[in-house]
Structure formats: structure tokens, C-alpha cells
Length: 213
Image 1 (cartoon, rainbow, N blue to C red):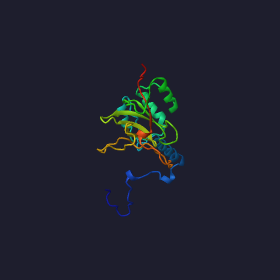
Image 2 (tube, rainbow, N blue to C red; image 1 turned 180 degrees about the vertical axis):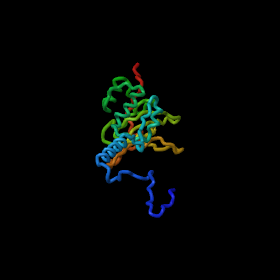
Image 3 (cartoon, rainbow, N blue to C red; image 1 turned 90 degrees about the horizontal axis):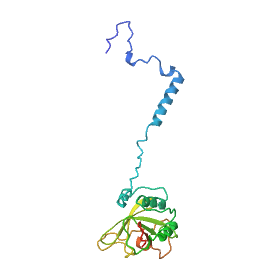
């Protein structure tokens, strides 16, 4: 703290707080250049507040569990078929009809009553439209009840569901466990008699392995 001012002596300003050039007297070019540098540095900073999604690697059907709840903007059929290819399926199909035709030619196409294995594909009819083969799912597991656990995309979200073609109209068993998931979705009101459960809408099973003799 500076000593008290003597009579007739002006109080000196502390050098550490003294600005030799007031802000309003500084050259405008210098201020603009400094602002541009600061703006550039800020623009280069990473957006830490935005979560960067990391797509888990799919090497086994169980790996798809990590994707449940994830939002998916891409076309559901293309994404599901890409997962199947990562699991070893060799098909150049790009549409549902092409996949069904390819599976039939390669002896991989079975009816809804076939018990699939993990990695097999399930083809459902009229889940959100009036078209056949409009939903594709991948089998994850089969429990002691022969209920199939599957992963599929509906409404832009990766979901986990269950299906049992042997009991197509049963929602839950006596123990309260899910037997068939509600698959039909959409905003329009369907006509009377429309089916909703997975077992009722399952049309084909596409084996991930050839069953040719």
C-alpha cells in the first residue's frame, strides 16, 4: 500500500494496474486482428458438449445387445443386413425381395415354423405398411421355451424383441414373460382383424448357413 500523499503531492497510480493506452485509443486494426485470432481458436476447439457415438463392433450376435436403444437414421433394412454381413452372411441383396429370392436359391429360406439359430434372419410382413417383407430382424438367442430373442429397428430406434411362431397369438406366458412382441407400428389406423404380434407377422426364416444337401 503506498504511503499517504503529502500535502501538495498527487497520489501515484500503481504501475501494475496502469494501462498506458486506454482501450478507446487503441488502433481498431489491432483489436479486430486479436478478435479474429480468438474466434479462430474457439472455432477449432472440439465440441466437448456433444457426445460422439461410437459404433460397437459386431462379431457375435450377442454384440447387438449394445446397440439397443440407439437411434438409427439410416434405412432399417440396410442397417440390419449390414449387421448380418458382419456376422458372416454373404449376400449382395439390397431389398427384402432380393434377400428372400437369394435365400431360396441358396437353400437358406425356411418357413416361420423353423427354429432359427443365433445369427439367422427373420423376415416379417406388414409391420408398418401393407407390403410383404417390410421388417428384418437378427436372431440373438433361443431360450428353454423355444422363444426367440431378436434385434430389429423400428421407429428409428434399435430394439430388442421376442417371437414364437408356435404360439403366434400369445403375448405373455403364465409366468409373465414375453412370448411375442408387438411389432406393428405406424400412425395410421389399420383395418379390423389386423395382426400385431411378432408370431403372427413372421413370414420367413433366413438361415445364416446353407442347408444344401
